[in-house]
Length: 579
Ligand code: ASP
Image (cartoon, rainbow, N blue to C red; front, side, top):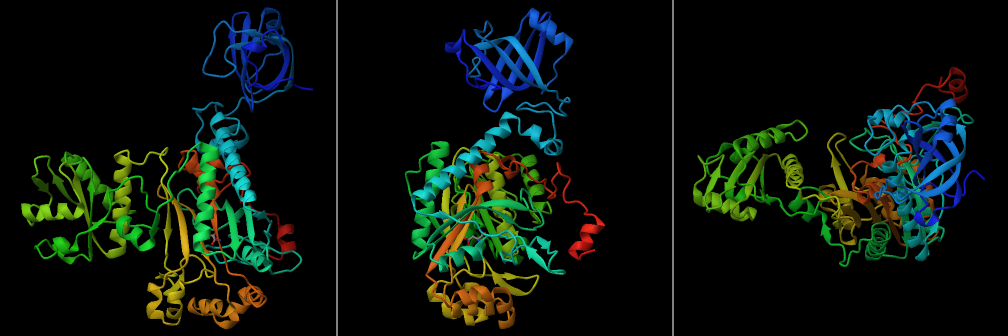
């Protein structure tokens, strides 16, 4: 036995005991003829005390940081107590020790505040994982998965594994593909999600399925995406949308309660997609703060200000308490909206002074009365700063929604410890894709339209108005889950494929198995998938999902530790028929 206790376990009440510990030498502090070592394992840190006699041994064979030790000794009360750690009242007076393994000096300090940059830490991820901060994240991740499993189990969900080597599933991203050796020139695809398998499990009668599962999407990596990520993937039969929302709201509440001790007394608010777009400019509103978008076309047009007269859309927000912004600050905000990522030509502001007067960048065109009217529409109070963007519809909406979030950040209104979940419902069924000049599925092609919009599916001019039985779970401005009630009748699925521009042959070639399964008694069904990594990051109060994945890839999709992707040798290529 290498140890009788862990490094996080011993307390003052254990004083006098002889114990054996094993772990890593985190820090080594020499004071003349004695030495202190902080011994670390997964459970904590315990201080070791090498007295003069033991120190002589140490001098013969010096220890280095991260050496692996086995230490036998007596628990004694520490004279210099550290009340910041649970073991801080004791130390081990070392009687015997063994160096189990040496270590090179690590390339960065294994401390919460490390001196290692992210790329270096990713290269030596096994060392980074020794850091307490990273370990806490992985512990949280484990707790979230355990809480989800416990909840789903209590609701009779059954975890079923689905294959990784499959044929393409259309979730809107590119597939990762795997060449087949045995079938030269042919390829498997890695699943973007288990979507079709979970639907087939419903056909098979497994009416409550879940899986905590890896998904693969070959997307251009926008900020904080991983090519492989994990979903809590779920599907249910004989349910309607209400059942799904209630079940997964309960699961989310259970996870928060279990992992964070946070109780949501109220139901999660529900907001139709159209309302989210109107009030927040996007489909994942951060409702921790208000500052809603207000359309101003009616009050600002026709007053001789060319920018507003020529633009399709004008939207304003009222930033609370910002009327005292200096010229420098408003100029800086103007530069902010002009950045290429935001793409606006300029920013109009109106200061609502404390004395009820106004000062604006468009004083030339708008009199006091008109500015007051704008302020009223924006819901601005004395002391607020109204910010207005103008331009083309979609771009302006997107830009002001970004500006709203930016102002939320600047004003400290986006506290990561405050959690505001909501459901966004009634998504459009289709989305127009300008690049390919056609309609694509907004969620995926298996999502059902609202029954009252079914007949519009044969009329392209109505496509943009068709709403789907689709919903997202949104938390603090981030989508953490999405799903839909599925199409379960073959003829409707065929209409859907047709609407998406698939010929009958293409639909059969790609999804023949699904269409034929739909002929063997398919129950009404629907489901949802939660982004597990993202949920963990939000629960942990962090922005990046990399911190919650044991072995993540960097922003360019590379595994820095393995140095993957990398070339394969010629022989392997030949075998795979891709050389
Ligand atoms: N498969 C979908 C996704 O990955 C989720 C769902 O519709 O259940 O987004």
